[in-house]
Amino acid sequence: MWQTVWLESVPETAVEGLVVTPDLAAGVLEVEVTTTAPTTVQVHLLPSWSPEGSGEAVVTASGVSVAGPRGEPVPTTAGHPTAGEAGAGGPVAGPSGRGVAGGNARAASSDPVAGDGSGWARTTLRLPIPDVRPWSPEDPHLYGLRVHAGADQVASYAAMRSVELASGEHGRPVLLLNGAPYFHAGVLDQGYWPESLVTPPSDASMEWDIAAMKDLGYTMLRKHIKIEPLRWYFHADRLGMLVWQDFVNGGRRYNRAVVQVPAVMTARIDDSSHALFGRQDEAGREDYWREAAETVALLRNSPSIVCWVPFNEGWGQFDAVRVAEAVRGWDPSRLIDHASGWHDQGAGDFLSPHIYFREVRPRPEWGADGRAVVLSEYGGYSHAIPGHEFSRREFGYRRFGSPGELTAAWERLHREQVVPAVDGGLAGFVYTQLSDVEDEMNGLVTADRTVVKVEAEVQRAVNAAVRAEFERVTGG
Image 1 (tube, rainbow, N blue to C red):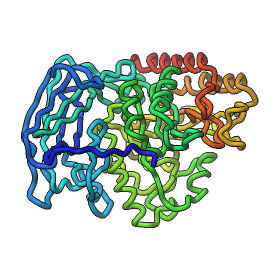
Image 2 (cartoon, one colour; image 1 turned 180 degrees about the horizontal axis):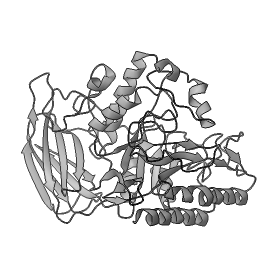
Image 3 (cartoon, rainbow, N blue to C red; image 1 turned 180 degrees about the vertical axis):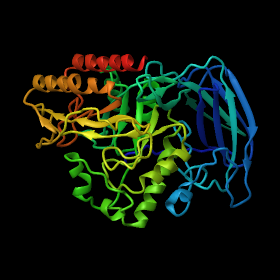
Image 4 (cartoon, rainbow, N blue to C red; image 1 turned 135 degrees about the vertical axis):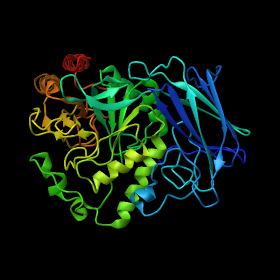
């Protein structure tokens, strides 16, 4: 068991879930409250979040949660398709959790995205915020929330931020954070530890990964094919780290021609050919739809998450255009990288190449269709540090014999290829990867998190150079 589990005693009429949506342009925070029965609801916005949830409210809004007729969805302002309507063959059913600090603990029938809403009550309250303080990696400000429903009370937090795709002053698509161009300097993060595998060994271990990457000058982590415990997202929220969140892909055994050959030669296959992608089973596709909706329902209250990544490198990919459209309906406030790596179907907000065996060079098609270009995997340079190996085997896209050689090659890659690509339209990158993982000895730090393998000052200097070049070409 690698996710947090708890039991909680609540009144018969209680808060079942929250959906928190910032509207930065309007200076308004929208809070949708789901309750177990119709009741009066109050939401108090505190000037800042604290573990104690103390402080005087700067804004209060109240309303009454309303239930729909029995067996019909409750009223909702979202108007989004459920997982069943989008393609899973039926809505998600089952009991719900109360993980209101980070979304519903389990996507359920009470949720307007993951279920049909039957049997619950809901109200949406809008809180105008004076002198809004936007959330960013440089200033990760969190507001406190207190929610009252009958005799029940819960505490949570929220942030005001926006993410958008726009055209930059250099004529190329850029990503906006709070209305201004912002480069996403990221690292691939698989969340593995030698002593516990996918289970974080401690709360401090989750915090360390985020803080360490931020200290090295990165502004984004791509959480790779894994849903972390909600505490991880809480730390990203409060420390200030953008997150690109992968969906878990699934499918049957993958076709090597589909998932590996594109690493060395250009290939794009129409993903409606389900069998080629290991997706011939209708039940498996239905599972994916349900789990995708559950992922959005679970994590969408986390302000650090700015992008959903439905598919990676063709692993179990199918109908990615339709998936991207559904995810946009569930959550129009975030960006979508519909097919990270290869087999781009022309959807979402990104052209998202993975480059390991070729030079990083801008191409004529970069930005031509209005989508931003993010190098969503590259590098993967390896060096095994004696005494810190996760495995006896060593995998890396290029191997180096010493930390000095590794650092020199890493710096050369970025100064000679990545920095110049910014002028050609590169809007972000995701270096592979944060830490060594089993035989993948290509981490920036060792698996035990005790050695930074690429010299820290070099990483900081290079990341600063990337930001400076981005600001130069975008006029930021």
